[in-house]
Structures are given as structure tokens and as C-alpha cells.
Amino acid sequence: MKQVLLERYGQPEEGLRCADVPDVGPPDAGEVVFEVLAFPINPADVSFCRGSYRLKPPLPATPGAECVGRVTAVGAGVTHVRPGDLVINLQRENWAQQRRVKGDDVIAVSAGVDIQQAAMLRINPPTALLLLSDVVALKPGDWVIQNVANSAVGRLVIRLAKPRGVKTINVVRRESLFGELTALGADACVVDGPDLAEAVKVRTHGAPVRLGLDAVSGRATARLSACLAEGGVVCNYGSMTGEDPVMSRNALISGGQTLVGFILGRALGTRSLEQVRAIYADLGQQIAKGNLSAPVETVYPIEDIKEAVAHAQRAERSGKILVAPNGPV
Ligand SMILES: NC(=O)c1ccc[n+]([C@@H]2O[C@H](COP(=O)([O-])OP(=O)(O)OC[C@H]3O[C@@H](n4cnc5c(N)ncnc54)[C@H](OP(=O)(O)O)[C@@H]3O)[C@@H](O)[C@H]2O)c1
Image (cartoon, rainbow, N blue to C red; front, side, top):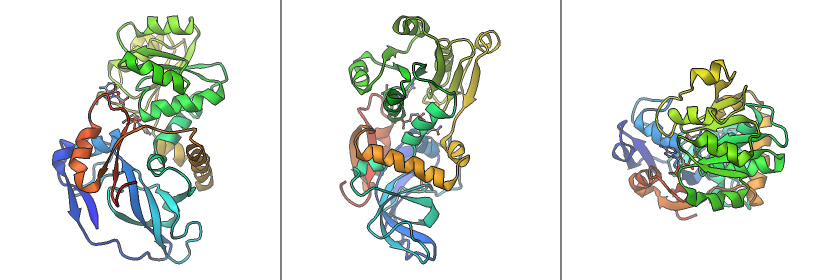
């Protein structure tokens, strides 16, 4: 089978190779074997390849924090999935044609779901959901501000905030996105810049903003914090600049603001396996109904992993870059 190997940390497309390796073999008791139908290339995968992610295993290593697959065999004692079922995998190393994993690590998704969307179910939808529920107790009518609003997570935050009555201010790098995000349910859109706080005040008519979701870091964190009310919370969950978040002393000391961090693994780790499965069941249904989605720009074969990873690093994409290791999806 084919498997992506990272052989050198650094510029991702230079360190990656699509290799021929032995098949994974039949499942042992309690294991599941599935063929990988599709995986996205997420910012965290790119920083894994660069060697700047929190996990930095010895090389060669196989990247890939998520995927969707079709079960081909199950070992003795596995009852929650069967051959033919679509599954997502809670473990990593998914940039390959086949996986053999512990049964508890796979979660079934409904048969009718769009394969490309299911490939992106594991990380961004629960991240958006839990950013809205675990950081600040938001009530209908509350305002939240977020940057990278046109990212997959940002779009999901807009969609998930709407039925909760939570209003979103969406910070992007270009005005041409306003129409698209407004159609998704954005209450306000603004272009990032030194006057962000003034622009936000105009759009919200001065209403207090309680939560800021930041995945840019650097000075962008301080610009988001400047939009928050006294006692507001900035939640940093990513760094598209590669920098650490910066907050002014004034916001922290006089403004009583708090800077907190979020990572999905820790948020899910506070929940039981049943609760985690329930979250994915609900999000999977919403994806199957078309309520939640992330746009896709291009799908590559696994042999073209270098091109796919280079493409995933371009600015102003219209959607995610996916790879389909076992043929078009
Ligand atoms: N902590 C967690 O558990 C967790 C979980 C999931 C995702 N994340 C983080 O969430 C963020 C979004 O992930 P995603 O998969 O939704 O991303 P995505 O769909 O691949 O989109 C990337 C976004 O980043 C923006 N961007 C790129 N470079 C930038 C820069 N230098 N300054 C400002 N914006 C920049 C892009 O804007 P343009 O369109 O303008 O290029 C685009 O909106 C990432 O930082 C990711 O690591 C964190």
C-alpha cells in the first residue's frame, strides 16, 4: 500500500514522500482495518511537517490528524462497526491507503454522509462547537469576535453560533469575503487592521463583546482583545502567523481580560467516550443534513502529496485541500 512518510522536518513538500510499504495485515482481536477514503491537509499537519507542532516524533513519521475510511475487516470482539461502515479515526498517522487501529479509536458515521465532508468531521466541527461552549457561558444575544473567520473553523463557528442566538463579528483579510460569510449567518464582518476596535464598535453599535477567538496570534491577538468588553476572554487556539499571542498589559490589568488557550484533545479528554461519540453523532448528522460544511478547493491523489501540501499553504484559498488515497471521492 501507499503511505506518506515525512523524512525531514522543514519545508513540508521537501520532507514528504509517498512510499510503497507492506499492507497493514488482518485485524487482531479488538482491532479494525479500514481503507482511507479521504483526508484534509490542516494547518496543524503543515506545522507537524515543519517540526513546529507540539508533537515531534522521530523520523520517518506519517502525518495526518484525521481522515474518513471504509471498514474492510474487524477483529474478534468488535461490535460497534462492521465491514462496509464509514468511520473516522480518533488517532493520527492517517496519510496512508490503509489503517489498522484499536476498535475504540474509530467512530461510525452515517452511510449517506458526503465523503469529503466526513473527512473533515473529526477536528474542526467539534473545535468550533466547544470553542462556543467550553470557554465562556454564552447566552442568546451575546457577541463573539473571531479572526480567520473564513477558515473551516471560522465558518463552522458562524453556523453553530446562529441557532444559539450568539452573534458573530468576523475578522478576515479581504472584504471580498463579506457576502459569503453574511450568507452563512455572520452578523458582522470586518477587515483586520490597526483600526479594528473602532470598526467593530461601529458594527455592533457599542454592544459588549465577551469572547474573542484567536487563531492568528502575534499582534492580531492584541487587536482582538482591544475589541472586547471589560472582563472579556481571548481564547487562543492557533497561530497562523507562527508567532506567540501578544496582549497589552492594559487589557489584562485595567481591562480585567483573560487570555486562555484551547486544544480539542484536552476538551474531549474531559469527556467520557460516550459523550465524545454523542458529539460526533450529532455533528455527523448535521453534516449529513447539509447544516455544517467546509468548502473544498481541490482533491489530490496520494501520489501527489507534495503538490497537495504546497497548495494547502497558499493564502486566499477558496476551501480545503483534500487527498483521496484510494481513488476519487
Ligand atoms: N486548538 C485546536 O484544537 C484547533 C483545532 C482545529 C483547528 N485549529 C486551528 O484553527 C485555525 C484554522 O484552521 P482551519 O483548518 O479552519 O484552517 P483553514 O480552513 O485551512 O484556513 C486557514 C485560514 O488561515 C488564514 N490565514 C493564513 N495565514 C494567515 C496569516 N498569516 N494571518 C491571518 N490569517 C491567516 C487564511 O486566511 P486567507 O483566506 O485570508 O488566506 C484562512 O482563513 C488554524 O490555526 C488551526 O491550527 C486549532
